Amino acid sequence: MRSGVPGAFPRRNRSIWIVALLLLTLASQAAGAFRLIGLAIEDSATREVVERYTLARQLKPVRFIGTLKTTDWMMDRPPFAATLARHLHPPLERYHITDKGNGHYEVDDLGALRGSFRLIARGPERRIYFVEGQFRSLAHLLKLSGSMVFTLEYRERWEGNESYVEVDPQLFLRLDNIVAHGILKVLAPLLHGIIDRRVGNLTAAAQIVSQRLTKDPKGLYRELRTWSDVRPEELDEYRRAFRTDEEGG
Image 1 (cartoon, rainbow, N blue to C red):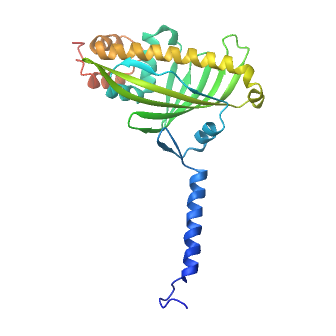
Image 2: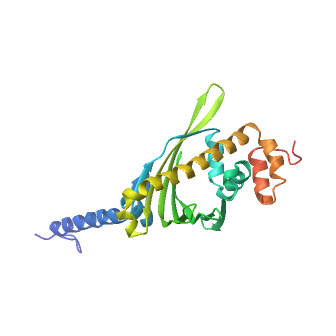
Image 3: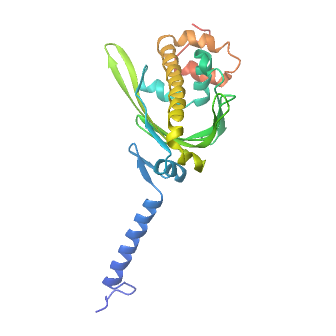
């Protein structure tokens, strides 16, 4: 029996269309969005690295004096954060980040590391970055290229009257070199060593920078005014964010 409503589908046909739409939706979800640290990700390059990684690491938690507000402020300004790290932590004095526009950044340490990164997703107390580029060993005997997904989950803690930020970093690394996948057991100790040294330097820099921002923002501002690689607009943003007097007060 046909429906009495002109142009209406028979019930059987409606059921078929509903099933088809559900299948299309599921197929789209399977091919596109997935979740990582509770955030929905639709970037295909990120998914490729996470699902087909060469190496994955849950890194040791990082802890430094500071607040969530200051942490988010700094992470929203990668080039300025790199400038602070260069000046306050000598092992990173060759480390530069350049804003290329549209949320893309170039990173270069004038030697072993060169590449780019972008923020893929962010939520309350969490961020996901996609990184791609090249790395050379210190002796330039080994050259690796590939992509990395770097996740950060962070939270604020209090001890007495002091606030701290705890960060749980995780990374997924996918090398471009097919041969590298086959000799991962040989490469793994080297890769772990490189990762640990890099993360160790970045951690030390973050702790030093956060200490100065929290304990001595005015003194740091006076130093910033003498650095030739700090732009006037960065000085102004810093002054307003940390309520430092332009006269250095």
